[in-house]
Image (cartoon, rainbow, N blue to C red):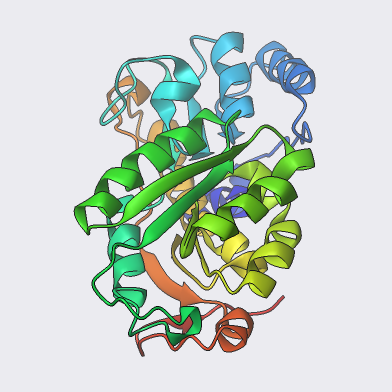
Length: 290
């Protein structure tokens, strides 16, 4: 997302017209605050806040410098406001990495509509209701929001949903083991803790023969069979275009609505699909190995 942001600005303005002071807080909130204070003291023209902790620090640090967020799932949670389906009412706008949850629920239903499709589970009762496990970190408000939202869509398809939460990385393996024992399919939203522990999740789910639908490409690459994924580069690039509008055209950030990913792609993990004998439709694209 940061790369997309920077390339949008250099594409539109030229490399000699924009200067970046790129700082990485490595997920530490205290460091985020220190960095923002440095930016405010330097009187920068605009701040890009990549991820929720950065945005919260930026919002606390200045009410005047334009702040663009990216890789933010839920601006309402991050900024403690009631609604963000439009403008935030602050010196803040940007792009969201909220997964297309309604479409992901439809994708899950497309891949796993009934037992005939997944002979792997050897289910004889083709009319039974399938159980979908929602696996996420309870400490991440964005993950809770996604799980609550997609549960409504999944129940609309007739699935029974069960929630499995872990407090941190230490109990992921045990919680995932419980989920595989009770569920036919597991859904993992865009969850930072899960994203950092996909190998742990895969080491439980794959031997158990339980497929994982992932909220984004990175998680799917590590433990999922499929995802309807956004491009983080694209949302960063979009934020960069918004920055150009602010810096060059004088756009008022307080009137700029939060934007979403311009495109989504049906993707699948070829290796895990082969392991589980899952065949995806032709309009799915294989995730490229790094």
